[in-house]
Length: 325
Length: 250
Image (cartoon, rainbow over all chains, first blue to last red):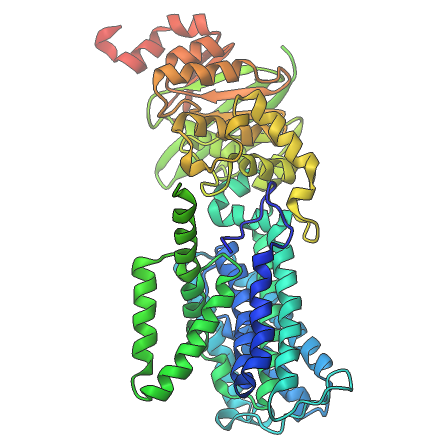
């Protein structure tokens, strides 16, 4: 499961090892029924991390404000369910996606004219502004108390969300499958290769006539759309929206997950959230006051000794094995 | 005098009180082999940056194939046939040699924005890129990442990317920069074999390469055109000797 870089000589066919995450996910559904809520949360964060990987790992857009799109998607789905009486999960997700896309294109068109630290600060500003709006618009969002009363109708009118989280888990898995397919398709496409070109050398991309700015706006919008969907899912599975979905901590946490897994590798977005959220769950049970110490140590080790994340370590080991006669 | 494919009229560029290009009138004829030389700080790279749209001129005009492109963006100039290479390698370092060239070919063919088909399904892009690499003697290196490629070959990839755009005007900014003299002959061989219909403006410090390649030479000094002429005329010009060797050696 090495780095997926696309390109004009890359084989886009799905390799057998790429079925591994799905086999594990299905096995977990049957083997760990008491952990399905955590499982659904992990699946959502994988989708959210995939959206981040698309812009950070492939297009080289640095951000600390991706929670703006995730949070907006969460609130749009929640407000539709709790205030507008629209319970259909597909409609909620479609609205969350549209809201993410709209915010993505409108903010991306402005902030992607900047680079480096300015860009980083602007992404942070966007999520801070949205957080404050959500905090003040109590009639719609519930403010600091959060938005409750989220009602989600059965999926396709058939599958009710149950208290054991079975429907939620499978529903999230299906949405993740679609998101993964889309992201993978993009990465292997000429568009994805040109994004890698922008990440590697935007000066040269300009010099070969590529509309660099518009390519970045487009991928940023697509990423925001996927993050919006992930936000919609978190609302549907929790049936509650809190201000934390828009927080800087949420965006930072996501970046940590991606770095842990490996940036620009598709499957780093799978490994990172699994390791992070399971570690968080276990450490919080064992050391309720110091659980973040464990996460921090893990991050320090990865950043210092394994720049390619956990998948980078695995890649290195595989490469060593292949070299040995 | 044949038609000019690229022309500048009264081109000026100033950064505050510092003038780096002063009223440059320049003509590049179709299919020309033209060199732009001058001492360090003469404004050669600034001139190329203005031609390609990286820097806006303070005043004056740039005309490409009869069209005024002074206010045109970089990407549009490329689409109209203006290609360039860089003095310091500007390559996609973690991509393969093939992908470096294919990115340019895909842009020119208008497929680079496609999202739903795999890049490798565009065999026309791959085949054209491979053909181009073969003509430059790089076919065997197609799958190697730029990071792992010797520097001399990286300079050839610079040229290959520009050729992938099928330019009518090619600006080569010191193509042999940093290349040992033994290897620079290989670059000269490649330059000699470039299609005749491409008008080439080469900026180079290697005088051996300049005098072997160019049919006309323009000498730029402190942002101004000092003299322009055939290589033999430039070689004899006292002012050029003065600029390069100093007063006492003339």
